[in-house]
Structure formats: C-alpha cells, structure tokens
Image (tube, rainbow, N blue to C red):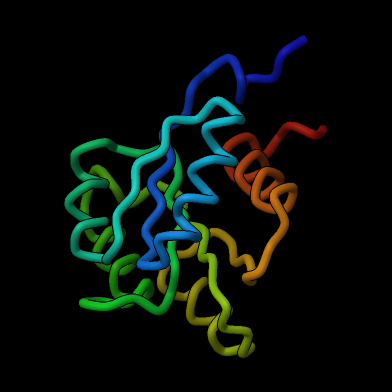
Length: 133
C-alpha cells in the first residue's frame, strides 16, 4: 500500500537564504514525491506562498530583509495562508527561540544540522499527522 503522502503530490515552500541548504532540502523532498518551491528571503517567500498556496512551509529564522519570525507573522495575517503549517529549520538553539517560533505561529521546530530522515519524518508528520510509519 502507498501512503496518502505519495499518492497526493504536496507543495512545500522552503524559505531560507542558505542556498546549499535549500538545494539539499529540495533534493530530499523531490525524491519523496513533493513539489518544492524555494524563496531565499522572507518577502519573496510571502509573495511565493500567495502564488503557489503550499501545503507546508519550511522556514529559516535568520534571513536578510525580514527574519523567519516576522515572515511567519505576516503569513498568518493573510486569509489564504494563515492555516498553512510553518516548520522552523534553524541553527539557533536557545529555548526562547523555540518559544518565539511557536508564539508567532510555527507548527514545529527542527535544529540544523538535521539528517535526511529527520526532515522526511517531520514533513510526513506535519502533512499527515494521523499516519504512522
């Protein structure tokens, strides 16, 4: 049997200014059958989210122009985007960073560096929370 994740191609928007990181995430997610869009800053991410209506957003915290917290706060104010889960991917590890990520609307938080399996599991659990596997 195939899971709902592989049967239904999901769109995932990655917002991160670290191009090698976005390339790695794109490769992992495309192998898993997802459609991946990339934005290298928060303002571009907000615009792109409105265009592609992603199922999930993977967001860095530290970026030029506006950071991941402010980007998420802006996304959550937009009617068509407010319910899209945002998962923060960051090298920052302070406890208040995790708290702030959830306070601004983040669904989850994953510290860099992460393994390919960790990103796959987090995406799967966020998109299909009722599934196990």
